[in-house]
Image (cartoon, rainbow over all chains, first blue to last red; front, top):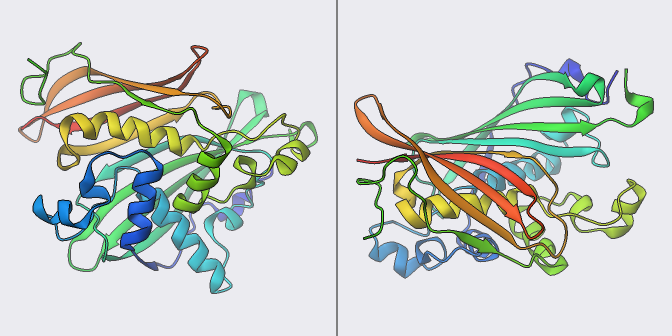
Length: 160
Length: 138
């Protein structure tokens, strides 16, 4: 039975434009305890040969969240809404990044989200949504691809 | 001499990264910084309504520490991939210890690469994340 809306399998969202903001990127880097100043100090980043502060390894998830909020502002369902994720039962199963190029403050990127499909586990006690997000830059091409499994711990009444 | 990506061999261990203790303030800041506003991490009332005793930490906050194990050591310019499975919830108050070990040296399209096995463990010994980094060894 489950709670995810499985009719969303195969859905590819329209690209959402997100601009990487320097202050927001630095705040994220500081919050995760990053110690390399290329992630929060523009002078250090430039001294190391970068055009601006550089996104830490897990920053694609932040761009993904920003794209979701941008979609919501436009009155469109974000990916979590589209798959009908229920926050009371939602767990993060896996996260996977493939890096193809650096992401810098000042970059405007497109986020393209895809619903790859759904599966079941633990005899129907868990259901899993397989999602993918691409971070694409108009000139530099694909910068990162994120894959994510989200899990519903299904309450008894939603188990098949 | 410390291990470098060029010289690292299977079994070599990378410098450990510790983070924490993770307070409610940490979670509030991470929610704001990451844009992940899921109330299960920041709103005790919501967590209780969902049948939990307490809020728990964002898995991605710990994955950021796995990333730091790889990038503190190799530099982010060398990072080609990072993946993680979230194997247990991280409670409020936990300190997360992240470790990396070279699992494999291999060639990809003629270029030397390292597969780094990563783990995150909390104070009571529970492993909370198990992941992997792909690092260029060129």
